[in-house]
Image 1 (cartoon, rainbow, N blue to C red):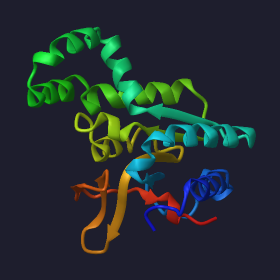
Image 2 (image 1 turned 60 degrees about the horizontal axis):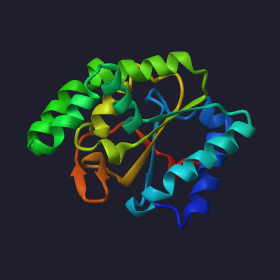
Image 3 (image 1 turned 180 degrees about the horizontal axis):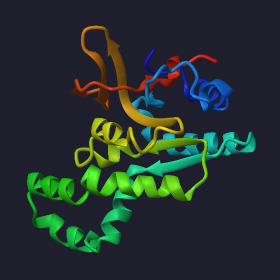
Image 4 (image 1 turned 120 degrees about the vertical axis):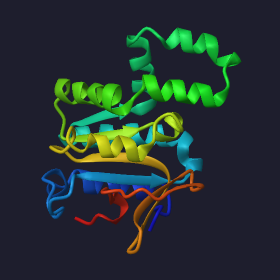
Length: 200
């Protein structure tokens, strides 16, 4: 199952799973990192922020604290903190896309800038679960597999849920793969679990 039947079914499943002791205590994962993918139809991208906010509020009422990290907002914050956001905006109209992509990949380097920024938020905000969103918005400057691979040592103490606009598929021969927007196939190996298949 890649997508639940509707938004309400997805919301109910996520609330039930994430609030469960089994999920919060990372039970049944073996030695795997507690990373989960919540894939959704790309067309649901406009309603997903609202659904996520409702879920965070609902979980909060039940005493589950969520650290909500939007990769797009975080990227803008990094560029702002480094004093280069306005410069990038100024040169963007005249810069080739490939050149701009290369430039952004450098200044938003996952290991050097993104992961330390996430680590700082983890340290500053008491939480039970981490939500990662904005995956589609930061493509192709940041790739979800790169973020997850580099996050393994930083976010291993609490479950992390990445909200992914596309498909998360498993095959015995090739492992797992994420297909952004259901179109861009990436055959990198992912150690994350499909949260829609998680049972409590």
